[in-house]
Image 1 (cartoon, rainbow, N blue to C red):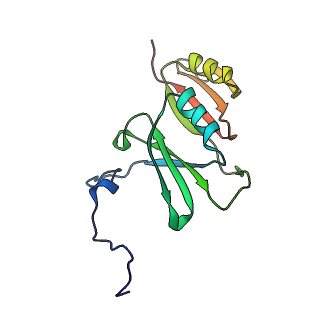
Image 2 (tube, rainbow, N blue to C red):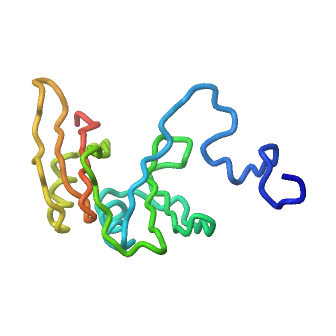
Length: 155
């Protein structure tokens, strides 16, 4: 509508195009996980799994705080978006449609041991599901979300 201060589609700020501005094919960008407390989430994903914080900011119009975490930068693959909603103090529920986030780990056995020592619940200890395949394991993060770990190194 003329005279409003709403952003225009043709406005371009390269700093806001962290996912890329010249992709020619679709790809997975991120998975969003709602959390009620930053500390347990950061302890699990950063301290436990070795991710790093990419960005943290507030979206006032949505009344949320966001944090993007991952292993590289945005262009190197999917990241996790942690979201805290200002006006909702209830604990997030996982419903029946959520399955898991999969994380590649060079040493699944060592990673599971580290997470277990931190207090994470191990749902499925490291195991080979298909002969000749990689170790896989399932653990719960400190917000109750299931994370699958898949071995990504044969050494």
